Image (cartoon, rainbow over the protein chains, first blue to last red):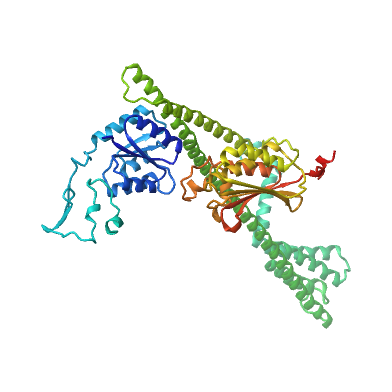
Length: 180
Length: 423
């Protein structure tokens, strides 16, 4: 199964080249023009890696890194024209796994993508964590059952357990849980 | 004073050194208050003595006037105290030496009592007045010096603060320039480098007879297109920088000639067609517009920038309205209006600053690509070099923005549009 990469950049020419190049190298690619739409795509599509620019309208790269880190451990590579140490440190502290300065050679970016994906824990649904635990709560993603203090919660229309994704990495928008 | 040879000292050593010392001592004495008293005393005594010796049968009124003069003199130079002393001494001398019976402190004629009293009052009053005048003059002088000092201090402070301001501004400009250069030069370079390395990568894998990543013809075409377009973009950026630098240095070479504003707009609309293709262009010209004396190429650039901006910052399919009509004070007013999100009132001046981009810098949210931040700065430079103005108004129905340019028609309103057709 192809790895899925979400590219976030407001420069259409850059996303054009990256999309074409990464697709050619066997990745599935989605593109977002800013942080907000990136978060939306991230919720709709199971992503293995996020590549993001820093300077963007709406939600910049730093804020996107923080927002992603709050909900996921997905690997993030930052691409930026800014090469100062301070900016790099900020980005890495905000949750980025790697930082590539623009302009870059495609070979280098591809190697960094491979390295980052290698380091990242397996995210495929067959090997991913299927049980989530938080205090007394115990959610089994495989059987889609919820137990609280070892007592199973009966399925009812108010809680849309069926909409819980199979992968723990996938973002679930809270409103979608309660919408049924 | 250094004495090299004591034997050379004469009994009256009036060397320049000695004179200057005397002068300094006199000056010092002159300025001291007790010297005033002493000289007031000496002055009155000397005047009396001189009058007694040389005056012969001098009138006592003349004596009184001369003594009064001495009192005034002393008051003007040393103030009220010495003047009073001189007055009292004057009264004593007048009485003793000049009023009969002479040589005694008694006065036989009651008239002379009155004269003596009048002299005393006059001398003291005159002394007080002149001393006060002197004090006033001194105070005024001190006040003037204080004002001068404050003025210089203020001037220094202003100078320092404006220097600091200029420094701050130039720092800000420098960092804006740096940001613009890093972003606007490196972004196209990034696309170019990524495209080129993708193509090179493919060549290398071909050489190794392994083809895990093979671009199709369309992909290769796309990479080359990106390289071509981004190289053009870099070139445009450099051209804009040069143009802006020229405007700022006041070296913009305008070649004004009589031109029809309608023709300039029509030609520019054609040139901008690839940019505005997805918008509805509405053009309106007032009848009988006069020709204007402008640099045709430069004004066309302004119109192009406004059209490009309108297309860039408004939805596809919306209208872009271009109008030209006569304005006040012998001007032509042209406007380009879009139905985009508009420019907030507080940013309307700043969008004409160089490297300012409302979307990136003004935190306006949008996902359209931003420009170089130089187009409007150049447009303003061109318009102002023509003696015109450029500003932003609300679009009609309070939607979008309307960029307005006024250009002076020119010195002689010779080229009325109709003339062209009057063969």
